[in-house]
Length: 496
Image (tube, rainbow, N blue to C red; front, side):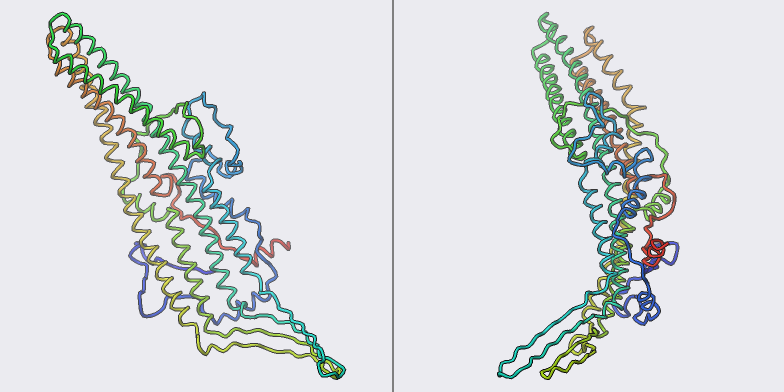
């Protein structure tokens, strides 16, 4: 199979050779008589059974989504049938949400069917073109006896020297489909985890807002009591009433936010029509151990599945370039005919058909293939650059949210709560103004919501950071590989 060496030094980005003009990219040579001979002698043929490819896709997926899950078993579930993993009376945890999503998702199954199609395409490219049979029976029209008859069988031979390149391209597309399916599964895992975190955040926000509403209601009651006793002005009553109404509005809004996020999570799980009368359970991920920036960037370049997909696209382009080279050669076919003449004499007529590349010598097709090869190499380079940018951005976003969460938790929240409680007591004792009470209540509310937001962001940013380096920080430093298929080896296995 085709082997493309893209990197020749420690920096994979800087060492991709990208000719945009001049000499053509390297490719297979046409003079490969030994390979053609081996193909003629080979008796094995790749199996249509895609089970091995489907299993390989899930083998790549499993360590990237958590060892506790078996994606192959989850995908055996009929996506049209509701999952039995979750009783809505029990709070939904994140792992259950991910497993249900795998059972119900259609995008992964579409990607798996693409693997099936690419396996079938590979088998199709191994097979020779079908022979053509022609038969002709004449009829006399001049009144004399006797009529000619002919029969011919024709076989195209061009496929012999095109077959290696077609197989290389088809096998690279098969490997690309396997990596794409795994990438789709890793993306789904991250999407569900993020959506679950946002639902859990919305639930916590409702609790915070409800507590703030209770505090503001208590303040309003004190203000009204003091106003009735003539110790407060109507202006204070108006201010307290407005503050309480704003808190009620925030509470009602938080209920809608929760429902919207539940709908989003349900849709990601493949259950968009499911009821929202349920809760989630979970926690925010803080104080996580994260590798340094250089290690993360190197992991992203080496382990990201979209980088591996782009590399497979380069292999497809190289194989197509080799196939385009065969356009320089004539199309060749052989035939064997049988002929019976008017007199009844019979004859066998062997023959050969050779096209003459007089008007089209294949140069346009070769130029197109060269351009597509350069495009594939440039796309690989751009993918590498995007990985670096996404990884560095994800790391900085996580650092920011994690730092803010620690600051608000350790230094902001406690003083805000203390100030609110002290001002409430002082106001009840007539030693503080209403404006101070309302300000400290608002500050506490903002501090609690800000801490919640930063903790949720730190969790989702961590998920995105893991996604940016391939799905997990624990992956071994080995690029995702899908072995090329050797028809001869498969034939030997089937014959043994």
